[in-house]
Length: 487
Figure 1 (tube, rainbow, N blue to C red):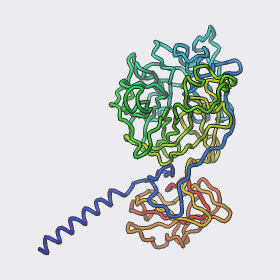
Figure 2 (figure 1 turned 135 degrees about the horizontal axis):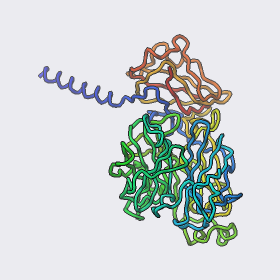
Figure 3 (figure 1 turned 30 degrees about the vertical axis):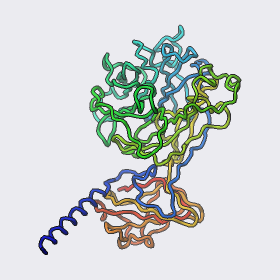
Figure 4 (figure 1 turned 120 degrees about the horizontal axis):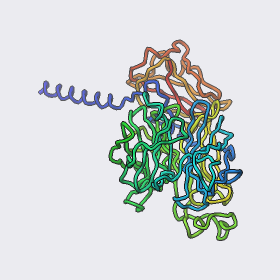
C-alpha cells in the first residue's frame, strides 16, 4: 500500500514537473513586446495600454501633379531597404473602379517622409510611358488589383528573385519575382495559390521563425461573400507549392469584418507578426445626405451605394492558425471631418518601418474615392504600439517563467519625473534570486528606447541564462514598451 502510494505520488509529481516545463517559454535573446499578453502572466495595479500614433501629415498626393492617378488608389505596401523606402500601390488612371484600367504604381523616398514618383518608362498608359507604373493588367488576371511585394531575406535567395510578390483575384494568386523591385517577371503561367476569392490585399513574407513563406489572404466565414470578411493563411517552402488554407482563429472575440490584415514580421522582433488591420463596419453611414456629393465622392461610394466605415486595429500572432486580439479598440481612428469617414478610406499600408532614431511609421491611404486621395504618415516611438502602464500610485506585473540567453537586460520605457521602474529576477519557485531582488535594483528613471538594468552587486545575468526564471516589475507612473536580453 505504501509502495503503491509512493509510486502514485512520484507519478503525479513527475506529471506536474512536465506540465510546468511545458509552460516555460524559451525566448533566447529575442525582443519581447507588450502588444499582447504572451509575455505577461499577471498584473496588479498595472494595465495594458494601446497607444494611438501621432499624425505627421500627408506625404503623397495620388491625384495631383503630372501623374494624376485617379481617386481610388489603395492597397499600399512600404518596404524599407538600407537607405531607400519603396512604395507600391494600386492606381486607376481611368478614374473609375474598373479592374481593366488598374495598374500598380511605384514611389520612393530616402527618408520615408519626402516621396517622389519616378518616371520609369516601363509601360504605356493612356498613350504615354511617362509614368511610374511597374505593372499593368497583363493577361487580364487582375494581378494589379492587389499586387503586394516583399523583400525576401531568406538566406541563399538568387539575386534575380530577391523581391517577390503575389497578386490576383478569382483565377488565383500569381507569383512574381524581381531583382530591383521595379521590373517584375511572372514565375509561371498558372497561379500558385487557388481556392479562395482573394478579393483584397493578400500579404506574403519569409518567416525566419517558421522557416517558410507565409501568405495571409482574404476569406469569408461562411463562404464567398457570406458572413464576415476574415483571414486565412497558407505556407510554402519554395514560393510555388502552397499548403491548403488554414482559417485564422481569433479566440473568444466578437466577429468583425477584417478587410485587409496587413500582417508582417515586426522589424525589431521578427518572431512576432504585427497586423495593423483595416476593420470595416458595414452598413454604417456618417455623412449627411448630400455631403458626399459636395465633397466630390465618386457616385458609387455615396449614401446607398457602397456603405461602411473603416479604422485600424492591432492584431498579433507568432505563427500558426490563430491571431491574438488583446485590444479590440481601434489603434487609429478616422480623422476630423466628413472626408475621413468615406467607405474604404483609412486603409493602412503593409509594414511598419523605422524612419528615424526612436521613431517608426505607418502609412495610411485616406480620402478614398475623393479628389484628395492621398497617403498619410503616422508615427510611434520605437516599439510603442502598446505598453504595460503603471499609475502614479504604483503597480506590478510578472512575466511567465522563461529561459534566455545573454548577459544584460535592456528596457524600452518611459517614466514621469516622479516615476520609476525596478526589476526583480525570481527563480523557478517564484522567489527573489540573491543579489537580483527589487531592493538591489537601481531604479530606472527617464525616457529610453534601450537602457540596461543594473543590480548593485551583480549587473551581469549570464550565470542565470538557460535557467527558468521570471521577472517582476515594480512600476510607478511609467510605461514599459519592450525588453530584450543582450550580450
